[in-house]
Length: 618
Figure 1: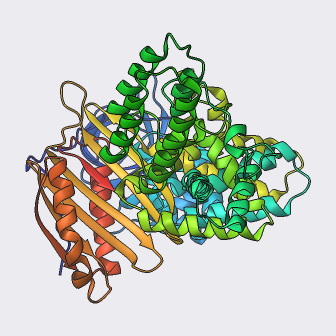
Figure 2: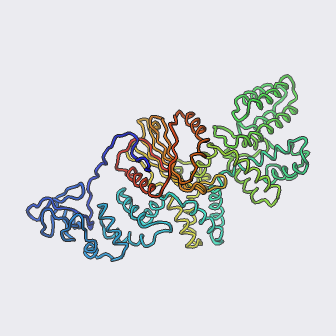
Figure 3: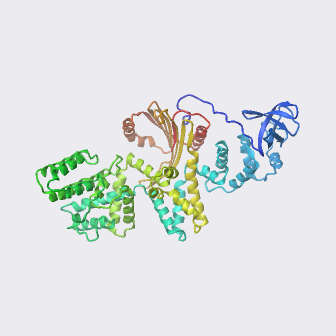
């Protein structure tokens, strides 16, 4: 069995553009003598390039040597540093002795790799590379390090330890979850660093590890309101629900079962349910008709409510059209909206439409002070619930998490991924340049890591852990970029769904159309996942003219049977996006196939090559 060749979608093969040859003083390269000229001048072939240079030593046509650049101005002067050699035999030891390099196994590996791939050899870079090879991070092989060094030279990235580690760790397809967990543990054990830095970074890390905190808190609030509104509810349960709302600072501490609704305040934030009830409360008997008309218009267009809920509320409003009982209508409308949005906050956990979500509408009916970015408020409430020692709060949290897990859908996963990307701070620098709100930006992990590394009280072990995570983030940015109309984005995501850990790497190579948008008709998408139960899984998704073929590679027996019920939902979901599913094929996955796959991907990663279509690896 073989994995389909990972070639560009459209069958146009365009050869890589040959970059101009640039020589630097002290550089060593392998070349072949093609022609001799008077005054010790010679034509030398270096890979695909040819140049005329002056040689210090007499040589013969056809011989291959290693040459060192002695001067580039006013003319190129070369020194022969090895004797004649055949293509099949290169004397690494002779090169080591000539350049006075250390005779270590790492240096031999470096020279062998550089010679094989015709990379420029500079003594200072070799000495630096040897040190890096001897001190690789845990979980990194020397072969991966050699490939990273090769990529640094091919992409002409500054040759420093920072960029080396960034590229090395940024291209890893697993391990980011472990890095974040280790950093969290070391932070919790350290009591010397700045308390503010520690708190901010732990909050950011927890937000990444628990991307559904806001939804959990929203569900707890909704369930508490539902229990309080039950006319035949048990008093004990209602007291527990009341205390949960007090713990979240939604209701005042003196609220009781008899007066809690009267103590609830209303938000003044525009276009929220609380805003409209607040408007009604402040209406005079003269303006009540106009206010009812405004609320009616809002209810009819509110996408978060069901038709049945809309009809119930509209009937209530209609019954007060010819009266001046403002206070009575406001109270009844308040209750009806609490019932409707507490129900929808549970039923529509993952609301992706533009506008106000059900849990935000619900909060606006209970709390006056409400920010525009209310997700942070819900996250703070979730932390308060987690820290609570009340058994009833912990029971409600467990119930809410169970509701969330049973409701998790594609919208929820999409929201979690977006949340994690923001919290990782992958677009931190770009957002700063755009002048975005600094308060929200500094809550991401990247600026917090920079602060930690500069903290003098941080231990060496803690700083190393922070630098490793930061290197991964920087590596993703270094590997992302554009060449002409080709764009590449690489992201590593530590995902946690239903109590399971998933390490995912996303590599996106996109061809842009003339209008600057992605050509979505042709795509090649490769999902590379490492999951707790399914383990290593590759999903190869090919799109040609909006026709989708999917290949799933996994070693779990019977996966095709488990996947069968999901195919219909997949087909429907794709059709909603104007794509047609041609088939889903399940095939065995083996390590050797992964290596072949990665080699093919490396070819596509060459920024010098012109590609067609869109290619993504997760």
